[in-house]
Length: 414
Image (cartoon, rainbow, N blue to C red; front, side, top):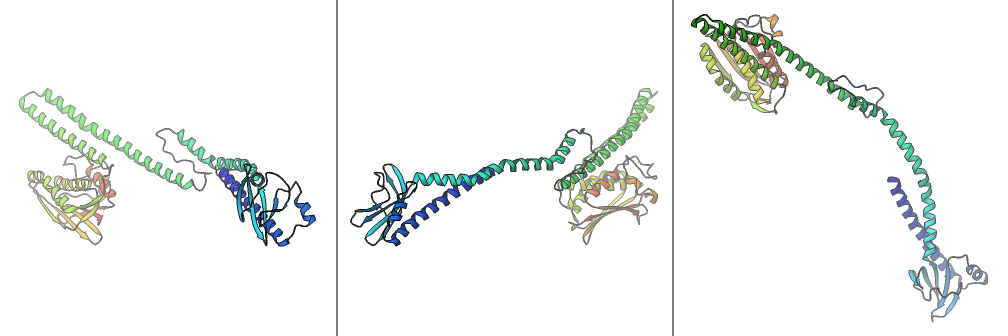
């Protein structure tokens, strides 16, 4: 397409240049005759040559023809000074007229001759381009095909892959322009493989953890059926209800953990109102255990993140503190902005977590050695860490001045 456009432009340019050259020849011939004064015998013979494309005519100012290169009925019978396009017997002519004393000199040329000569010149200028274009096209096609062969190989490899194949793509031999794209693709495949491995491990762990409470529920239902009297039946039913509660809490925690893998939109979140709402929701648990729950919140404590996820983080931490603190114990929640950080601190008067267990308790389905007295799924702190990592926050466990566990979560301030 570009070669054709170039050829057309070149053809038109040569036509225009040739027309200008012919006009220049007309003008120069007319001026040379004017400067010469008279047409000598030798010049007259040369101008009367039939091979000459030009016709020279000289008139006296009174209209008499003084001279003409050849006599023909189809010659111009009048002149216009300067360049002019005239028509004689239906044939267009191009002429140039100039005065010389009492004479008028006109040099004319048939337009068809000019057009034929100009077309021949234009074609000769375009022919080399026409001849070279196929060769250039073939060379360009070969070069592109050779350059894109590694890309075609890569595309074929990807088309032939199984849907669950996340191994890195072979990056050797690729053009420099494509190599960064393949590196980014391999990075994405690696992250997807890691995410899928985590999901598979989560499903396997969840299936394992759900098997025990479901088996317990089945056994408790059988005990209800086999109870010998009303008192035994009531005790078995109480155990069954407690088992259902534990299974329900486990499923809720599993669903919460799964939802945290799909982050919500980031926005500026003021943590004080979120904390007050969480504590209000946990008021029934506080009353049931006879515990004391206090909140000290800095209204300037705001972070960038997902408000719903941050509420889940707060609820898990406070709920854990309340459940593992003995009845009548104390839990304190503090929110404080410190420079470019926002710190969430929770202290309780419970048994705490031994230092040797403080890293393990963030793993899924892992509970501290001092948690045997309280039912739980071992997912609360795993959820907390998942949300904290998404918000670029650091979680630390320490000993609380109240005698139990202190949890610090440090967020980047908004």
